[in-house]
Image 1 (cartoon, helix red, strand yellow):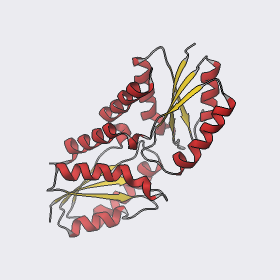
Image 2 (cartoon, chains in turn green, purple):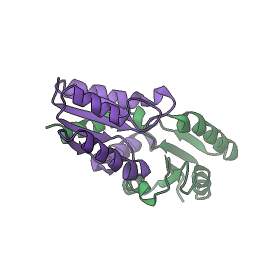
Image 3 (cartoon, rainbow over the protein chains, first blue to last red):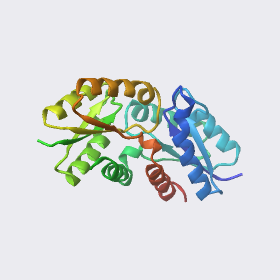
Length: 124
Length: 124
């Protein structure tokens, strides 16, 4: 039982290998914070859905959930679909404090990490 | 005229704002390496296509192109579509040395940057 959860929310794909990077982030977070529930959730093709992951976290005692959209950029999925999903979660679980983080493409230090990696690897 | 080009290859979306993070990475790279052509290219919905970006870089004198797939994970687009696109580019531009970097979800330091950001922002 942990009162805090992180849900990593990704697009999903038909290919099971697609989820591997998200599993790595999940394990790194879990290793750093064994006291926090760290779960994956998917928009399409893969399970659990976001609804299912929230219900599971709540059943395990989460009172605060941080939702991390692991999308490179804000398209229809994040701009239209995510607010609807978040509204539904807040209705169904009014006791849970839900924090939604920005898309990773809106995080300057992650964009800088990508830039630095390209510069190291790409440029002769 | 620059003999070296970096092409940042992203999924694309109907929403023009979607491309903003990729434009930031492009400008950071261009600022760090004004001697290299840094271009965006898109799989769907947006222009230029990868073909168009390669043709433009070649017309501007590129003899070496580094292709950076700005996809979080390897799904059908990267596993099936990208090798076909790359094969076609190599046929059409045999004089160009083409290097393809991994998806960003396969880069440990970028996954670590995401993990660190979540830990800083998400966990009370």
